[in-house]
Length: 235
Ligand SMILES: [Mg+2]
Image (cartoon, rainbow, N blue to C red; front, side, top):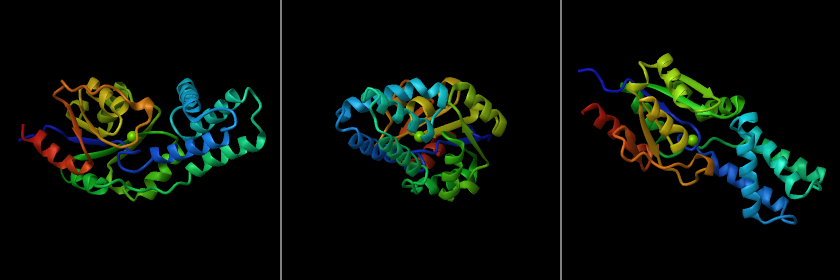
């Protein structure tokens, strides 16, 4: 009997390895640097607004985040932020590009198990160099049939990727920690969208779960993925 699914797509950041916690550490440092000018909640609100404003210019990733921190620093100090503080912000951004890659629980086993029965893809947003570095350091590179580092995750992105590397999006499942990027556009494209819980979520990536949709599933962690795939295959 033919399989229901041919291809499993994995998100990377905060699905396979830690990421958001490095952003949060950097944000805490950023707030300390500007404590004389504003409190952390206000600063974070302004920073998020700058990041959203700049996504269309810089895309997702550490470089754009660093530029948005600088822009926010200029804003909240009414142009008085000092060059040494800007240098510290740049340092903090570079530090993020060197952070170690720590796999999340069950990440390796989930990909290893999936690839025994299905084609596996890695689909991630972010800076090209940074994502390539993290994939290399993760040791997971050889487990994927293909890797796609994309500027955004839209229904068209998923249609294109699963056409190129699989047998179409309607026989594909995407698993990730972002409702907005990994789940909703995948389901809209006609595929299966699987949300995997992660403690830290960037505000931008939050969205309502499509709970009514038969192709939507949520997992507590990647340890539950193989059972879900088996269940879908047995329908
Ligand atoms: Mg993610």
